[in-house]
Image (cartoon, rainbow, N blue to C red; front, side, top):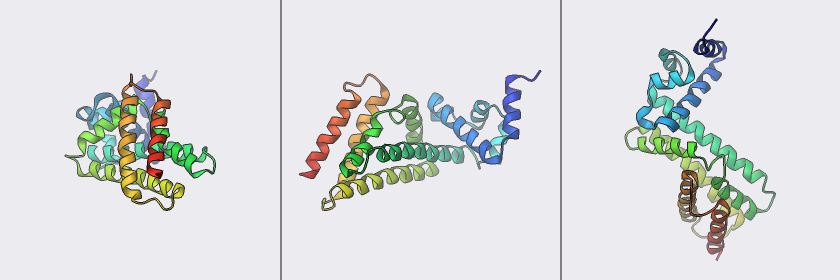
Length: 203
């Protein structure tokens, strides 16, 4: 009878190349969340995916490449959650803007596992150019989305770029506390703070 690792490895072999690559990306994300940047290696990722170590290099140039693509995939998941929140907010520009902001205060974005992965990504940005480039890409896309929604809400808003940067800092701080757990405020209170900040921006 095949062992569990043998069954996983067989399933991986039968999967198409895109599925195999995605399986390795998700395994990398789990290792990052559990072990941090120091615990990520070819062997650790492949062990998490239940495959032999040599398979990673069929899909990635190395660990750095796998981590960068995992960061990009994680950013894509966040973007999808933000887009869903906006789409569910109706047609009112202010409601859409608040939905984009406050989605970060609730799951799946406000999550200990996601925070742990991001801490690992951040720790690598100074030493790994690929990871640093993805960080700039992911944060740039978030701020652009925020700036676009700010202008749709207040077309005459002066300095939308700086407003988006300041609001991103507020969001990040509140998200960090909520994701760590035992925050001294609730998600609802974080949402109220964000809404109050918008009133200040609007003048």
